[in-house]
Image 1 (tube, rainbow over the protein chains, first blue to last red):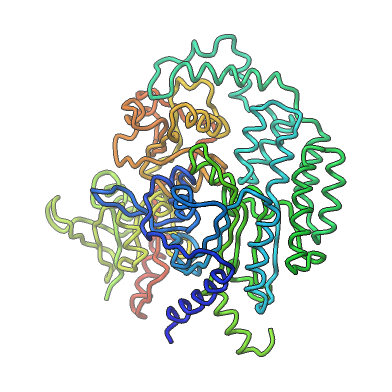
Image 2 (cartoon, chains in turn blue, orange):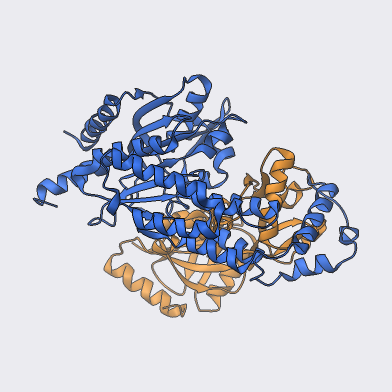
Length: 367
Length: 231
């Protein structure tokens, strides 16, 4: 059997596992309209996806993942709650690392359900966990919802919260914004000069382009308000840092987060959801006592993951990308649904990797 | 066989390249008329001059069809992925200096840094229903730069020429382009962001890494490199 045929067979095996739980198999087109993906992910997607075009339909992308078309399909005519499974190739442009595949198979499982998010999270994780069990991979979990709740709870302006929320998925930028809002960074000279000027717009000269004078005036006003806003307190900065530093086996992580929640009650709800998820995972037979939890896990993986996140990697093969990844992406459905929203959680396995790891096990005896 | 040297086929870049080699005792010339793209080399044997568009030299080096090539750092880094594994920069030649910079309208008195640009991009998207457009032909370099600095909510618009005019024509809100003096930017009411320098570029002599040479070609190449004082 050729490699590709073997991977297809492995994908079919995994998909059958998902179908056995009642998930409805779905197919999506390989060519996806570029506009929706660009609107969602911005310019970064061009670095990751192959873009092609014709004079008739304009820009199209070779499917970089299944999530977006599956969400679109569900939102257009799905009944709730819904469980879907799929398998097929995804395409990722590689410009810097020749060892990374530019085309590979994914098998996925997605749950759209309004009730009991903890249970839906646990369902997706346990299913993938069980499917991968023979490979003895290392699981990683996190919860971006806790950080988001912490940002909402900060004693600062809505504008600052919005700026931080926007960069949750860009850790470097997030830290820089925190430092700036906490008064830890010097004000850039251009900003200081602007704020010192009585009537800065008088210096604007010729206006060119679409951004209007009114927009510029409005931003100057926003900057003045921001300059008058007191810095985020040292205490709150430390609490955010304490949250981001949580990294332990799940029960210890939970305990730590409950301690932090005493000083930052805003995260209590998100922490309670974490606790409920651990109960739900336990009920499904996952050993939560040793399940690793890392509060900052998954932040740079995919924009729009905004709750539970997880991944599975192979300790003995650090050269391989994650074998499986997934998480909750309510924010993505909100963005795609134009006002509508459906809580969603899902994950994907790469059958090409499970197959080669399984082969390695038989070849090398016990792994 | 011979060592194939790729040199820009037109204008000042070609002349200055010829002068640079000439000053080191290697005379490069066009074979015939100004319209003839064949070249000749005097002062060393078994070196072949190939006249090419500067934009094609990175690709030709990567493919190993030329062994040495003169082009801008900007073009190498824009065109080649993981460029350091494909070519080796032997010498900066001291001409063809140009900076790839990010510029916005001068009237944007509220924007001085990338931080500001990022915040404005978010507000612009909310107000106009589309992302803030940046016109450029250096897609890779600009995208990587903006990602490294955490700027979001922008989109790159392809512009292969007259890029400074795109803002006035309202096909872009900002631009990323090569500038040497900044005069064209000023004339189009644009200003460079304080931290908007993406890359400093100049004409550079590159060697292709992924080529296999015969013993005699290796000898020719090392002889040439000694003469050029780049060994």
